Length: 439
Image (tube, rainbow, N blue to C red; front, side, top):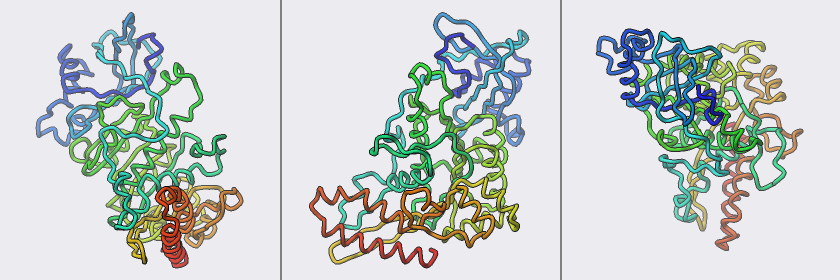
């Protein structure tokens, strides 16, 4: 490893097939070269050979940096990525010298230095469907809230009782690193994936931007590594070639990994800041996901459910959490369960649609209630922002008040105060009804 301090000790890079071909061709017959060669155009007979899908082991690496020719031994995980086009390689430095018996893989381009995180996420190469322009006009069926508004409100709840920023205009600080499972649920068409993706954007940007160190110190830190497992991959969070402050490994089922268990095993060696699983369709997948989330990692996924209680019941059933002790174990593995419900409204002067969330969050009081009362503790609350009012479960009326207030200024600019009042009355009435019915 170069002595240059601008190169981080642990890092993830994107390797092309040619990078691996060049490496394997240097000294054929070595253990590392033999293992990596199986990743390159493996024949059909090796399609289901685990060795043909990824390499995990010791790997000598030299990062080419000006005025430096030092090398080091790394624990490396190299796996298929982006539909088996390039490879994602995560290197973790070990404090031992390079073994002379192995050739040294030279990375021609060192990891791109981190850039300051913007306060508001600006994805590169990824287009969200809830662009601001699609939220207007208010009276022609447009959405009242976009996924970005909902995600910011939910992230404020994830921040929980952490201290507010001294600047009231800045978002709540999140104490990194969070750990546990975040499940975004709802019926088809409620925007589960879009809200989950925005939560990921918001979380990573908040955590990175609030680190109080110098830029030099920040350059030496391990950049947040986002791993996305999807079936199939629908959208990229960012372009893998973009110069951002994130390391990014998108993987597609059937092309980059064979099974969820295999991908989760790989992720344990890839130092992820966050793991995203596109959607849980098979109930048997919940146990390995909860086991991964319970190992100190943050995991976000989506699933279908008719209500917040139904979503929690699914987790209880699949985890077989029948006793208080089992519910306690389950609660400590879950960070939040979110349910989205939407509706289209038509009032006297407006026609619009909206989606409102409800959330159960892992906090001391909510865990205690869940362990003792089970599903009976999942009651929506509309309490204020004070810690005493926070019981870990927010209803749709709470989010209706919060989200409507966040859009109040838009109506003032358009001089539509009466329309705003009319919309508020309709949304709040429906949110209260949903809360009372447990929907």
